[in-house]
Structures are given as structure tokens and as C-alpha cells.
Image (cartoon, rainbow, N blue to C red):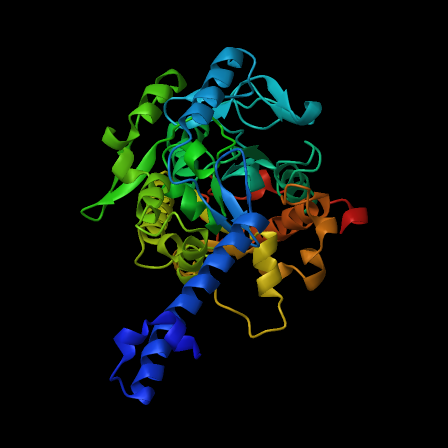
Length: 438
């Protein structure tokens, strides 16, 4: 007895041409075989994958976010912060979302925060000395210098190298961990400009484009911190600031429990991405991973590319930041700080790929004083020996970065290409260089 007569009762096949019988059976068997194959793959993926405490499912290099907010987990993190807020080093700030507690330390005492709340072992007057170029740094943890000591961070070394190069200078480091580009700009507006710097350096980390479209930090990185942050939005081609003042931590639990109805929900990319993922097939791990692969989730092009929400927002923030700095009589410098993953692609043996965020780098290069750190690096700098366990720059990269920036600024100041309107004559800031250091 043939296979198709087992599938179809003989009464149904009576009078059917044998060729047609075979075609009918084949047309039926093929979908069944495909369905069984898909079911087997679904079972394999579920068995081989893992789900973490945040509800994220990981298989190979793909990670699927939990579609529903993990309200109990979010609530626990908020309650943990509130119970320890009097001793926490990273604290709520209504203008910035979070900042460092003044006169505190991190990293077992190797990361010192001064009385103004930024990284330094000394305090600074609001007005700079008459004979000293004041430089202010803004950015995220790569600027703040996570995982290295106060003596190893590039901002501290920059000041020493400028003096060795004959320029009397002081460097104020306003970088803060987990900051987005918008928060760096806000820190300039809220605090940095009041210290009247002559040169402002913005540590541009393109990965932070994703932070620009995020309001609630825990939705981007489930481990926290338990804060919301101000978020710029482009509305009718103008930057508008949302969630300002930032929602205090004690109000976040109510927000999470009723998130769908909150007015900020449409502006939280990492809530919208969950709802976009909640499609009819989202219960299938196989189909969800296929969807992630097709949309190239690792690069998140809807955030990084020109024309995207994140891309255009990042460009607008850099533009407003730069114009505000220039309008306050300071030189604006954009410093590109690549990640290890960026360097791996940059120094690959394949034709050098243009990163999807390249338009932002090109805009910064064409519009402002621009330093591309990767152009001063070598293939060996991809190696883990130059990076911290959390993939921040290690001491050797901080040392090299300080040298690159110092050399650039010395040339810029001496050649008169850096606008320093506070100094009609450069002689007060020029130092005699010992013969041994020439």
C-alpha cells in the first residue's frame, strides 16, 4: 500500500488519476514535514537557550527582551535605592536624572568626587585663573574614566601633558557613568558653563545614540540605575526637553505599574520596541529570533542610521551643544571614543566597513574641531590587555588618549586655531619647558 493511500481514504481517491493522486499527497506531506521541522527547531532553541532574571531569552548571540515590563523587578530596584539613598554615590538629580554625590568616592576610593559633584581630587573656583586655560570634559563613563584610578584617568593625564607641552592648563571632568548625549549637553548647560571653560571637549560615544531615545534607564539596562532621565525629542525639527524635571525615584513604581497610560510611554523606545515585538508569532522563540536576525538587531539601525529617530536626534544634540558652547565664547571639540567592538571592525582584514553612525562622525568633523581617537590606534589596541573587564579603556589607552588630545590642543593653541577670546596675548599661559623634557 502506498504512502498517499494511507493518508487519504480509498473512497476519496477512487477515480483520481494516479499522477494526480501522487501530486495531492506530495502537496499535503510537504507542509507537514515543514511544520515538523519548525516544531523540532522550536524545541531545540527553547532547550538550548536560557532566560535570565530580567525575563530576557538568549540563544547563541541573539537576545530577546521580555515583552512585558518586569514590574516586580523594577519595583525591587527602586525600593533598594530608596532604602540606601542617604549613602548612595550615584544619586537622583532633577535636572540630569542622576549625578555623583559631592565629596564621595567610588571604586574602593580610587574615583574621587569633589564638592561640586564631578571627578577630581581638588575643588575649583567658578572663575578660571587669569594665566590658565580651563578645559572641561563632558560625556559618559569613557570620559569619567570608569575602572581606572584618579591618577590614570585621561583627564588628569591631559592636564599634566599640556603643562609638559608648555601650556598652563587645568582640566575639569564632568563625565558621568551611563549618561546619554543629551545628559552630557544638559550637564554643560546646568553646571559646566558656570565654570567658564575656555575649551569644551565632548567625548562622543556613538553607542549612546540608544540612550538618547531612552527615558527610564532600567528599560535599557535592567540592572539599573533606578532613575528616569530627561530626554530630548525632535518636534517640528526643534529640540524639546521631556521629563524635566526628571520623575523622582519614589514615583517610579506607580509609573511602571501603569506604564501604558503614561504620557512618556510613546517617547520610551525600549517600551515601544517591546510592543512592536508582541506580534501574533511572538510566542515562538524561533520566529522571534528570525525577526531579530532580519532586522539586524545587533546594529539597531532604527537608532543609529541617518533619518532614524536616534540618528537625527543625536545630530541635533551635537549641533545645539556645539552652538551653545561657541556662543559662550569657548572652543568646542568633538572627541570620538570608539568601543572595543568598533576597533575590531575598524582593523578587520575585510574591506573597512563604514559604521552605520558614520554620518554623525562626518557631521562633527565638518562642523567642529574634531579628534578621531581610532586614527591614532593600532591593531594591537583591540586586545583585551588594553581594556578593563567591563570593556572600558584600561590605563594604557587612557595614557595614549591623553597624549593624542594634548598634542592636538598644543598645536591648536600655539597656531591660533583654537579660539580663546579670554586671551588676547598667549604669553600668560605659556610655560617654559625644561630642557630635559624638550
